[in-house]
Amino acid sequence: MSTALEMSPVAVALPAPVVEMIGVRRVFPGPPEVEAIRDVDLVIRQGEYLSIVGPSGSGKSTLLHLLGLLDNPSSGIYRLDGVDTMSLKERRRAVLRGERIGFVFQSFHLLAHRTVLENVALSMVYVGVPRRERMARARVALERVGLSHRMDFGPTTLSGGERQRVAIARALVAEPSLLLADEPTGNLDSVNAEAILELFDELHAGGMTLAVITHDDHVSERAQRRVRIVDGTLQW
Amino acid sequence: MRDVLDEALAGVAARPTRLILTTLGTVLGVAALVGTVGLGQTAAGQISQKFDLAQATRVVVEPGDKNGQEGEAAAELPWDAPDRLDHLNGVDAVGTVSTLDVGSDLVSSVAGLNGGEGKALTVMAGSAGLFDAIRAVLKTGKFFDAGHDQRGDKVVVLGKHAAERLGINRVDSQPAVFIGDEAYTVIGILDSVSGRAELNDAVIMPNGTAKAAYKLKAPDAIEIRTSVGAAQLIAGQAPKAIAPNDPSTLKVDSPPKQGAVRKGVEGDLNALFLLLGAVALLVGGLGIANVTLLSVLERIGEIGLRRALGAARRHIAAQFLVESVIVGLLGGLLGTAVGVLLTVGVSFAKDWTPILDNKLAFGSPLLGAVIGLIAGTYPAWKASAIQPITALRGA
Image 1 (cartoon, rainbow over the protein chains, first blue to last red):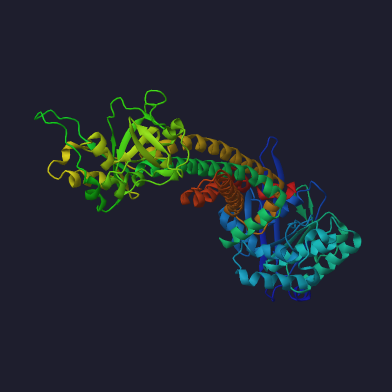
Image 2 (image 1 turned 60 degrees about the vertical axis):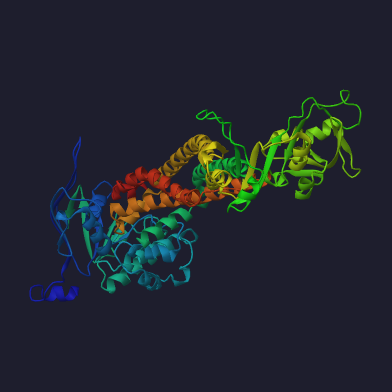
């Protein structure tokens, strides 16, 4: 796909944008007033694998929250799958978030008292997937991340790498438009980190749109496109 | 809706030890409520039951006071009154009772010692049906019957205390008592009577004997034992059956309308018990609120995750609210079980009939649920107000 783009950028229709941010600002009211994100223009197209790199305090967490509809921009335009998110009510934003975005967190965020399978199925509870379908789909997602033998285990019995794969299966199972990963390897050793990055490569090859936020250059190198964030602005 | 329930159940079940500790307050509160109200009802039930058996089936007919209207003497009760009443539906037993005027005659167990060891005992007369009508129980011997009555046999039955005073405790040797100079054979000794306590201190002879010896003209009173619940009816019918021409000349004693006594006793007990239970429940509710609030803070990461997975504020609020209701309901169920066991156990030990209102037994678990609902409202609101970013960062 990228070769097609390079060969004939005008003639071939570009894949539809998943994320469109235009002039987005996020100001935290003071005092003192902090402008965490300013004038961000960002387009992520279907099937893209983007990494956003930046040191801590650069505003990358704020950008992640804005991308994930966990927070609202102070001004600007943010369209997700063509839907203008700025005008949405809280309830509608929650539905859009559940349906279109799959989150992968640094600290996994698995429910300790539920089985692996239940943890994965949980992401379909709030988006209206019929109960009968949930378990079957969760099994498929776990097979996809290579954890079919761990389905009935509790998360506490798993290694860090396995936990993160459960979290990725959970993010994938609702078939999101965008997989949003926040320091996905931050709590993993290099072997497990590598396994997760390989999984991301596979997902990318399968057509998934990924945005990985990290401070680790080694992680960001794997992406198809890298964006650096410094002092709240994007640098290409 | 089912999802909310499932998630809440899983949330509750995740921490069994905490669940038990959280429900403890409600368990105690509901148990206190059910146990105290149950025991209150049971105890009051025993009081009114005793009252019922003794009093609720007793009707007494006596001649009315002189009205003075026409200067007539009070009406006399007819001798055949028992026969007239006996066939009324609802009359189980009926008998006459009279106190005899024996002048200066004393009663003694040994002949010829009149004035020496003689006792000033009451001498009474009755029909054969009297003993059944007043639920008399024999210590020994037998009652006199219609045959003794008709023949005017010189036999007597002694009241319990009268027998003691006369020093007679067996009848197999056919002991005799003397009333004045006349000897009478003792054929039975009473152990207890209900109503007419004066019979305990009396020497009782058949009506026929009394008519012959003391010229008894008419019975003093008629004792009627009715079927349960028939007393009011019989009280209305008896005067007409005895004196159809002038029923108003008779005076009828009947038990108070059912429930009046019972209500009074139960009301006092329940007010105190309910107050105790309410205090316990308040403590239980505060316990649930406290633990749920703690749980919200503890599960802040879970809240963030659920929000990220598409849960709206109302989903979070609903989950914590339902969890709290489940805890309350569980506490209510356990508490009701404990309370019922308590009531049954105490009743068993005291040989009472346990009385438990169905509304109480089925309503108490719901009361627990309502307490959970109230207790969970604030924590649930608090949980739903947490921003997802804060929640995800906080864990």
